Image 1 (cartoon, rainbow, N blue to C red):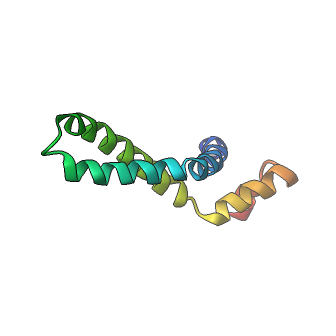
Image 2 (cartoon, one colour):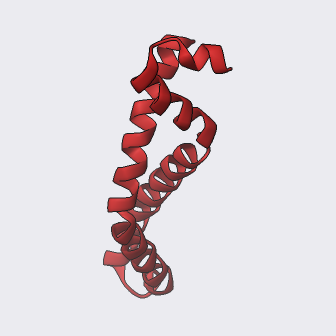
Length: 93
């Protein structure tokens, strides 16, 4: 379990910072998706792009929710661990 957390927590922090960088892209995709939903019956090209955008939005939303659900206490403990010693997380828990 410790090994899994040691791999997951840094990745979660990294994903969180990456998600912030892509927030404008996410908003743009979401806006484009909403527009394409309105146009999908009238325009064949938007119909082709709609499933691709839906998949990307779902994937980004799933990733966002996963990272946002990492308890801040775990992230704080990980930050302390990196400065104080390897077993600090397990001592705190």
